[in-house]
Image 1 (spheres, rainbow, N blue to C red):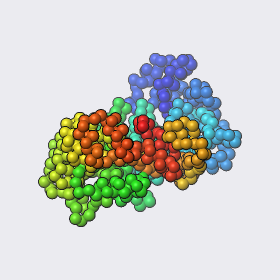
Image 2: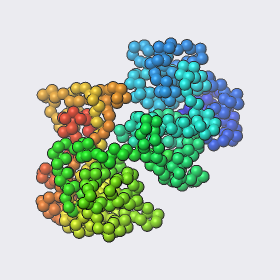
Image 3: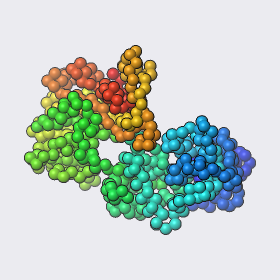
Image 4: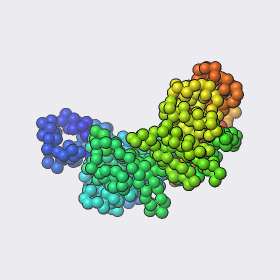
Length: 540
């Protein structure tokens, strides 16, 4: 039904089509999650066509009666059947400037944005009723599987299977199933951006969540009041085996589900595949090959820190090395490495795991994240007793990690002695091969510090079938490598501020995130606006 149902009900009351008392009485007789508008229509208080006309008038769009409109078969052929069913749209005509489409929810702005993203066209919208949209979809795109009825298990099983296969095809990293007031929104995260895929009727939330809990085997179907975590392993239609990490959280409209699709190709990535240019690759390869010390990877959530650590472990994993990791949770199982899962509920914290790991005589230790002073202190001591320690920290840039460790209670002379390097990173969307030449704008030139007087041509997103018209496909890292040299050790011990340390590190040759991003713009790997977007905090 309609995205903004409460607003629509207010419009209907103001139009004199329905009394507020009738709405209130209808609500009292409804089950949780049912649509008020749909109940009013089913009880003959309103007609579906009239409601659609009110919605259309309020959004400045024209109403179209799809039952009386015969769509040309050539127009139907312009839109893929699966896409039309998923986005709930019918193509009506093409005036040469825009594609005219019928929709049944003019309040769903995110859905309309998704249509433009998928179709890569300017669109003109007409509004029809949900009932006539259903009839038109069955008429013009008849292969539809009736997921929305929810009768029995088979439709829900097929719906969930289709979701997994589609997400994999789109190279999604996450699937988000989000309960709203009157619908269930499904979004995929592709190359770091969330894309709205479909809205299901609210009545499908419970069976979808139940199906996912059954598939994860470790989650309770009966328990809906507390968060739960699980894992799903399955084979897709193309033969690909995927793992998904499942998380449910109770919200005010029902259980919200997020599933992380674990890409096992990350296990075999080398430093070059992460986005390192040859000079930085040589520097970082040397650093992770040191026999002892702490190497930290920093950045916000979703910046690829864990993937970088796995790439380091892949490079270091040899028969003559004993490697132990402490992870929360263990995302990928790596052959030849001892992996410990953190379970705080039984006392297996990062600090406790790290203490136990040291008794196992490892050469290399990976700690998923340094979250507190106790873990930081043990990691520092491990490094000073001959172990190589790899870990992550949440800071915006590399030099500020020194202050972060000091705030946790680690003495500065210990930081200076044990830490070998700190690397900050971000992820930029990589340009697809369909990229085109373009010119920098004056603003981009000013922000990036690239001279445009010589007419340098720089890449811009194009658009093709491989990248679904977006011009971007996949992601790559940009990096800021802060090496703790003898000069830097003295600065750390002198208790200078993070800003002063950053300034001095740059004077000593440290390249910032933005500067590394500019190199990749000039190399034709990423677009200028993408570097600006992900380095807005890199003031220098």
